Image (cartoon, rainbow, N blue to C red; front, top):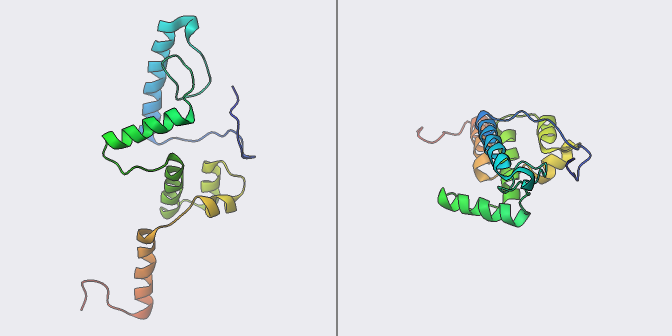
Length: 144
C-alpha cells in the first residue's frame, strides 16, 4: 500500500538509529507470529504500527498509547507532533545541515523545515550568549 503524503517529497528511505532499527525488527518478528496465528484473518494493511490483527491504529489510538507510555516512563507529556519539532531542533542544534533536515522531514523546501519545525528554546540560545561574552571580554561564570 502506498503511503499518502502531504508533501511533494513522497516516500523516502531513511537510515534509522540503531535502537529504532532493533525495535522495528523485533516488532516485525512479533507481527510475523501474529500473522501465523491469525492466518487469513490477519489484515496486511501495509502499516508498521498495527493492532495484533494487522489493522492500522487510528491517530487517536496512537496518541492515547503514546501518552500512556510517557506516563509509565515518567516523561513530560508532549504532543506527538511537537516531538517531531523537538527531534528536528535537536538535529539542527547538533549541526545537521538544513538540506538534510528537510530531507529527513520529507520536505522539498528547506524553508518549510526551518520555519515550522526547528524551534530553538532558551537553553538552545545559551551558547550564543557565551559567544557574546567572548566578544565583549566579559568574565564568564566562575571567573573574577
